[in-house]
Image (cartoon, rainbow, N blue to C red; front, side, top):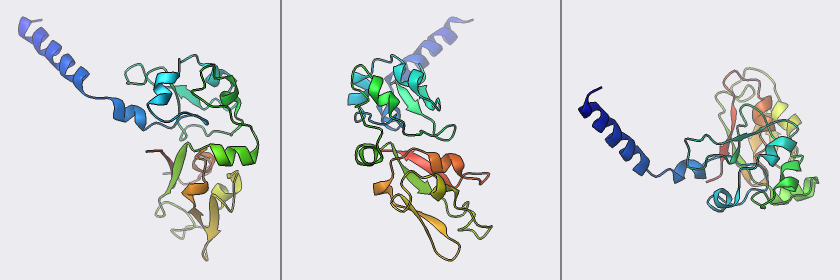
Length: 184
């Protein structure tokens, strides 16, 4: 390998390291009870206790290549959170604040993301058939999601949604009509 190639490689690596990575860390879906972005990354020690106690195994950890490596994240497209709140009970640093596994406490204290609906992909909204799976699996039906119109299409109320992803996981559309977006 030539000296020129080595120097160009080092220069490229140095340039990449100067690019701020905070924006990526701030736009992840975190487990329930998570502190706000910034405070969460500073407080979490990456002990993996939250993932160990998670029954559905929906907690993963950020890549070592990211600014917030070793911190817990949720990929709700792969597996939804069942809101058992076990992860919030074992966090030794309170990066995940304790939340009681009672519907009222969860509804009041948990916001992991907000639902986005693509009506073009949603079976009732695009006229391809009846479906109410998102409504059926929602822990807060009639508050976070309701069925409206002649075809009973879902209408989401982001202010009442906890962002657990059960609706996204249940969506039968090949290209899912529902996506939980990270909080800003």
